Length: 240
Image (cartoon, rainbow, N blue to C red; front, side, top):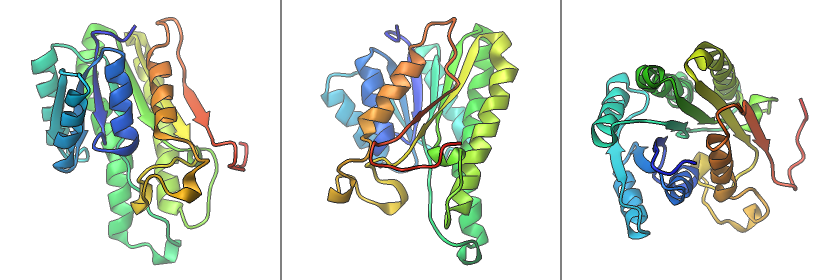
């Protein structure tokens, strides 16, 4: 169902974003990969070595409106259409409120919230014109409850959930679908951690999140999946 379509994946240099790119490529999608560092070019090369030729890497700051608009324009120049945006890029840190600096607070909001806003806004004209498209944001289970020492990160995920819900109502008349995927603990590089640590053995894997993206993006046109929440079996979490 996704074969021949085009997707933009942000934060695609490694971890969840890179695995999302792999899974979408396996579905036959053409890809633009956006990352904040030169590592994004290696990510694209890795996909090409797997046999996926239609991959466009772009190094860009997703919190910069001009850069994200330019990335969308380059995607349309190369592929002529855009069917899916995956807002995956995100950052996080965990500190008490009285230990959090204003710069830290601003940075996490710039990437996690402003980046989602700017990316979604940038693809809107094309998707509205075609009366088709899907926007998926990788959020977090803390969009549904709170945790100590995570005020900034948790606040961004509540913001993303509210933004996505409002956006979904605004664009449904254009045939555009908007949803969020809210995972619990994932074995990845989040918050300066490493992937593959022994203590993360029973956590969700990056392919679990990527498979959820494929499922949401592949839903038939008459179906809208607003939200997917998934956790590792070992995680005990509050139920909203």
